[in-house]
Amino acid sequence: MLGVFSGDVVDVPAELMAVGSRTACPRTPASELVRHFVNSTPGVVLLKVGGVGNLAFCPIGQPSIRTRFAAEDEIQCIFKGVLTNMGSLRQQYGLAKCYDEALMVIKAYKDLRERSPYPPYSMLSHLSGSFAFVLCDMMSSTILVASDVDGMLVRLFWGITSDGFVAFSDDLELLMASCGKSLAPFPQGCFYSNTLGGLQSYGSPRDRVIAVLENEEEIFGITFKVLLIPTL
Image 1 (cartoon, rainbow, N blue to C red):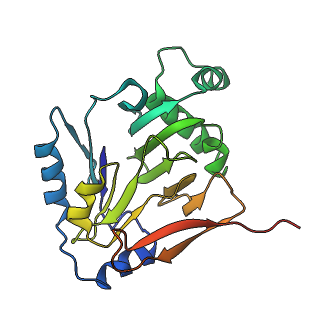
Image 2: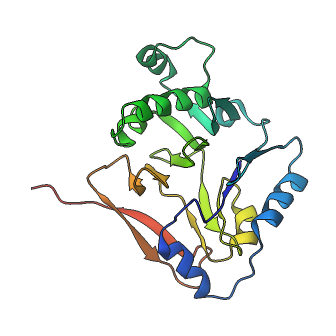
């Protein structure tokens, strides 16, 4: 899956932007990244997200890590993986059995939006399973991206293209070719939103997410880690 968004809308951590200039690595513009994903992925579906970017995905995959897409009320969501507590979530939100994971995330997000200013971790902490998702609310130009706490089945990465677009994908090689060293694993148990507080941990809401520079020979220029705050 792939989500690419304009840097005019998505304000990523400055460390991810700065690390790209530390080591000279080739990067490409966002349009070339999207074109490469479409051309190299059979059966891909490409969607334009208002005037802020693109979503792309391939609905083919193993049952446990299948990619799903849903759209409702100007909200679009790509979800990869599986939620293991769908039964209790359907009951919590009063939904029918036909709701899959992508629709479930949209419903949970809409509930969060209506109860604003509830923090996103109040929604995300209820999701159990192996997953990553990219959600875009076109009415408010809100991006919400999250990864599960373990990252065992579904890995998510993010980076910055040569023209300043922010890209999220589970395809590491794809992002390496376009983002160079401005590339990092998306931290597990965390979420990013351009309107809901930036990059934060929902697995440990009290703790801070920090950026750690990697050695130049490493694939990633930087990693993000949750700094645990000792409890007294």
